[in-house]
View 1 (tube, helix red, strand yellow):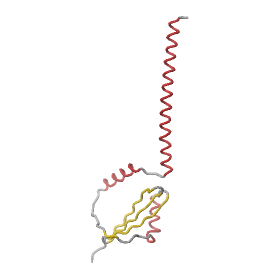
View 2: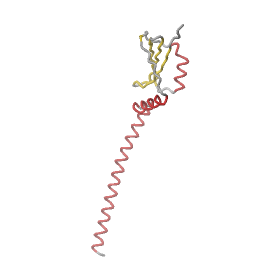
View 3: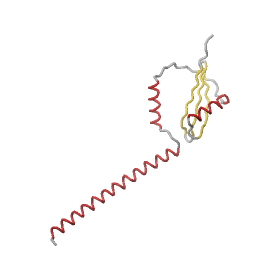
View 4: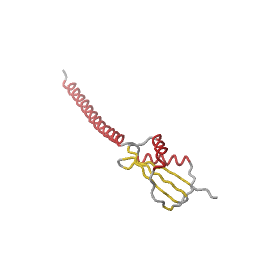
Length: 140
């Protein structure tokens, strides 16, 4: 009697404007899929709670034949790949992205303001130096 190869995978990603989870259930070379909309970015414990409470009530797609890849990934490489994906796409809610954008805008504005202040200060020093030079040259 052969054992059934069962593989269940959950992928959570941001699909504008909501966070979405895709359950992939592979059994005996057949793939069935279910999509879940979370809304706000789910925390790890919220995802686990959702799986425990709702997995058996999910509506899966019709079965599609697929090939199962048996790949053994080094855990450190998997961790690096996840870190790379996180850096490319960026993680955060819309409010976090808005705050980041606002922070970048404030940085640009303050950089321009500091440059203008520095130029004004240098001009003031130059004019003061010129004034003192002329006054010294005239005599009292």
